Image 1 (cartoon, one colour):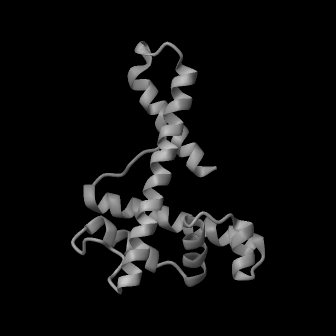
Image 2 (image 1 turned 180 degrees about the vertical axis):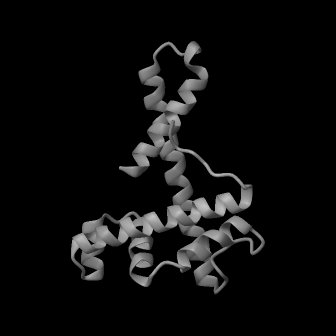
Image 3 (image 1 turned 135 degrees about the vertical axis):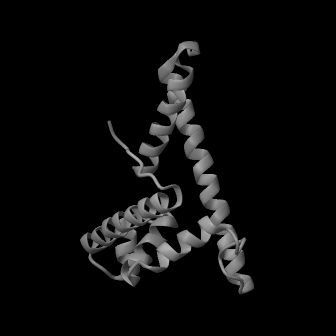
Length: 142
């Protein structure tokens, strides 16, 4: 659901920039959202394959050790409690909370709670990282 919301948001932003030249905004937005979803799912698949290759070779999972953003993400993920890290990793692999609950032998409500807390904590850390890097806070509303 979150991927779909993100894709719809990005498609609407794209439409905003070209609205006057679009004959059918509904169709344009639907196609744009599909392109965003396919692009993002392709990125996730490529990143997963890179991580698997890195793990198999014994190298750290970050392709470029000087890539500050990648290092920041790894650090943020490592700072999560183990239970939250596990559910985030499985969710990133495409598992639904009910599947994760079976895999980890946990209550589905516990899995959803861990996912929610992990996402909230990561969102706070990303915001803090952005503020530290740019010196300004972002606004996601009016």
